[in-house]
Image 1 (tube, rainbow, N blue to C red):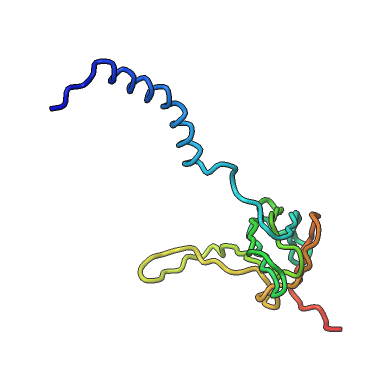
Image 2: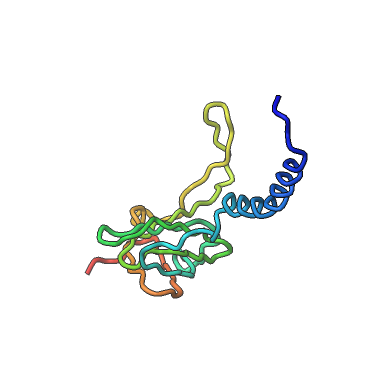
Length: 153
């Protein structure tokens, strides 16, 4: 056993006690990830608006914005809530917009002995692959879908 000098212990305790709050704050910052989410390193726009089918505003669903082959960026998704959507960080340039809009039919379907509500897509078939859209600056957008395909020019 090594004898300790009586003044060594109090000095060590005082030093640790003095630095404990600093150490605690430093660990808190490391654990929380200072600064929040990083901004994308490519140009983006915030798009707000509505989606309608045959003039009727869609109350719920989602949209997905996928960058074109010459556009730098990530896929962005937005929920349609109470007829409106807000899509943040949409890559600027040519994007493909796809729609997920469904409703329950009121019928129940049983599959593998499990009943669940039948759901059908409301997106007209000619929009199943989405539409091309050029995202530029932040602005309001109205995506007006129709049940019948528009005549080709």
